[in-house]
Length: 396
Image (tube, rainbow, N blue to C red; front, side, top):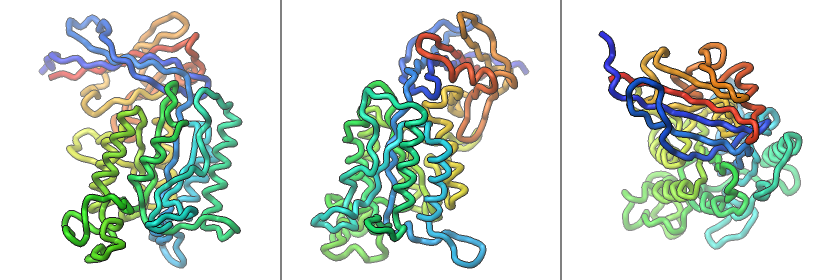
């Protein structure tokens, strides 16, 4: 039976990318449809040709000292696995964004609530100032500096920070969200939250482990939040953490959430990390047929974390060759997809397998330009743009 086409949804993407990467801003406007006798609304995206800012907010709480599962012998800790994965990412993909680093908790400053529960109050490596540009060489040098900082933590070297304390996620998100360098109006601004634990350490948590243990949802263990010191600091800080992510998104700062460690794959951790990822604007898409799925990026060991970091780097605005599509936007058949490409003043229909591939699942779900076509897009500039129009037809 021939499908009756009553709904046509399409996504048109105009890309003007820099030689290396492009940050995107989204302007939505009606565009004339293909001649199918249907009303079509297209989303037109214009890339500014600017490499995105990405502040990495990395959890250095005491649970990072937990060994990961291994076959035999002495197993590495989560922190050691994180160091290995970060080294791979930073030394191999350091040019995907203008990177910065902030760790939490901040064990280097005093605080009435104790250094083990102190939120971030300083950056380990700040982002470049708005209005400045960095070459690929400078971007990679910056990434190498960040890698050196991470490798020094827990190294036992003089002056090195240690992995210790709780997980003051909400207050640390508030801190990085206020950094001037993350308010750049000319490029995408991102926070990469990498954590292995449940958020806590909020001295203003509205829940109390003494007066309302059920609302507290103590993260320290059963009946462990019933004293004056841990009454609020030990309570789960889900609602405020999600609120902070929403506040960042309202100011155009998207949050990427990575859950690292076995505990982040089940129970309360999935609930919390999913909620933050959904509000952060960078959630993983569900595969076709899935009613629910993990919205954050999960990893249990070095290899999985390295793979997730690689997947995320491929989705950054610095990769203009990917046109993400939600599961609802995917066509039911490849023949119901049309990709128009305009370069050097000439418009043509792109060919699947030669110019692009359609990814129906995974972190690159959507239309991915490949080969020489992708290279042409990467070389485009605001004065010499390449425009992509992706029409995905959904039959009823």
